[in-house]
Image 1 (cartoon, rainbow, N blue to C red):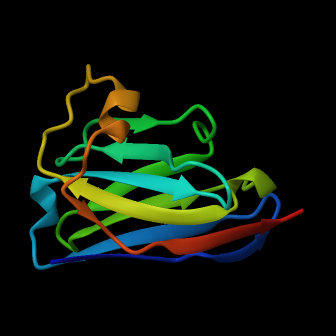
Image 2: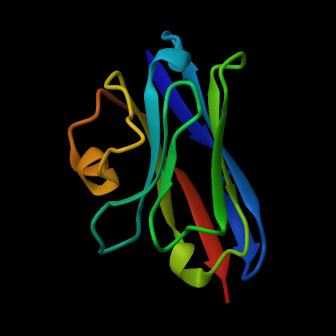
Length: 129
């Protein structure tokens, strides 16, 4: 089983990137998927969550209104569209999958901090000022 994040790169402030999280070896449509990031010297931060069917999403305060999470279960892929990027968005971005369903009434911080079933390798996003 593998989760592969891709789509990172170098972008100027205000620019956009779309990250992809592609799964192989499992059927991603049965999993809640989260995007996380970790900047050098900082703790890992939960960025966004999406339920298995895509109806429920959550965003951290720092990205709400700028980032959009979506999924294409036919392609076994989850996306993170990142707009209006800021230098403070610079980090390694990771996707993770978990079989626990995501409830619309869930506490996002609790979900992001729990132990996830699968983690992918990250993709680096660098936003220049």
